[in-house]
Length: 219
Image (cartoon, rainbow, N blue to C red; front, side, top):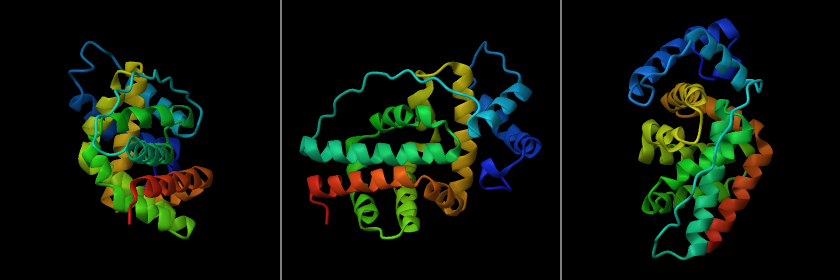
């Protein structure tokens, strides 16, 4: 993808660059989409509207299964909260509507093994200790990258598949796949600029990182 932030594209350029991503998404998820018919031109138009806040999505929250762990409940709850913040921020930076990012992030993080979450402790500490807004944004993307290494894009998309109408899942999934893949290929440099814009959400993530550092005695 020649442009790393798809929000910067005009509608024709967006359609040109996202068409291969949509085609690949439909191939990769063919079993889930069996019997479904999609008009690609309309889907690309709706994706463009979505990343610019003109196409709303609906997300049905599922039941979150309580975690079983030897860690204190306060510790793991604090880590989970911080990681949900991080995933939510990155989804919103990628163009997912704010109205669904928190619920989608909760579903994604619920599928991550506890040991993988605790493996992010040092990255959470780095977020808590970051000084400038840019450094905080970098730390947030580092935590997300750690999540991605554990889950991969298929697990991320699978975690939200049954919480959305199939068409909206295709829209959201294609945008997430295209944008996150492009960001990871460039070490998140362009993502950091998008995350910085979300200053209030970044501040909340830092506050929750501070709680996690305290609850888990991370040093």
